[in-house]
Amino acid sequence: MSMTISSPTGLTDQTIAETLIAGANAARASTLGRFRTQLAVDNKFSSGFDPVTEADREAEMRIREVIAARFPDHGIIGEEWDTKDTATRFNWIIDPIDGTRAFISGVPVWGTLIGLTHEGRAIAGLMEQPYTGERWLAVGGRLEHTRNDQPVPTAVSTVTKLSQARTSTTDPGLFSGPQLSAWTQLSARALQVRYGLDCYAYCLLASGHIDLVVEAGLKDVDIAPLIPIIEAAGGIVTTWDGGRAERGGTCIAAATEQLHEEAMRVLRDAMLDQ
Image (tube, rainbow, N blue to C red; front, side, top):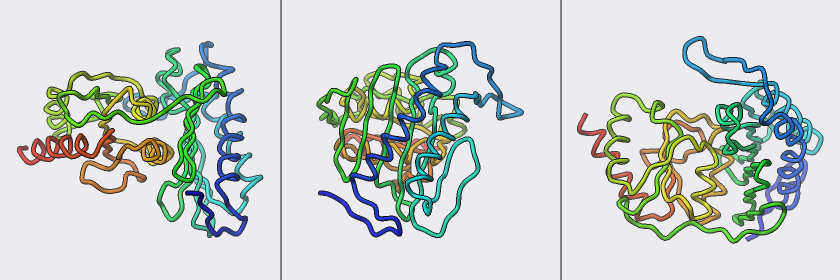
């Protein structure tokens, strides 16, 4: 169903989609042009490793310029630059390179994330992996998956049992204390586990190749743009306690409601045992 939301600048499904695509196009020269080159890498953390590159910073600026030109009254929340607060209820969410560790390692599972929230709820999202030419775009409850601008049929799998689930998390090191024990128990019951996929895992879930993604320590920019993609594909995504996931923290995304419920039960029981 097409969506039209009252906004000082006038917002429709078409203008949202055009802005998301224009933002991805603007970022591509900064990201793809530097991928698999020898980049200087800065560490945002004094303890641990949270890499950022010139490509991250420049790509986000290019996306911000697109949004500001089209919707100057809207807020912008980004990974690399300060939040732009406004009086409206709309915020664009940007992670210019989700998966910078993969990016600096030459592994094409990073992606550009751009989303739109209304009163804190994600209503549209895009993930583009420019090296593979793939894009997932969700607007108005509809999902379009393309590869080199050609449409690709996309839907979540029908897996309902954890024992049959192809499962992913970016890094088990992101779990701590009871969370780590819960992940250990859940992953032991899954069919298989793949690591290090960042945002790409969620889009593979939306495309029916992964069935379950479980993570912790997420920021809003890591997950909010992906929520409309997962939901439009027929999947379900929440926090570990069943709430909305837009603000980050823990996250569980599943292909089916039955799989989501079983995974939630395993996590909950494991946490209660601590």
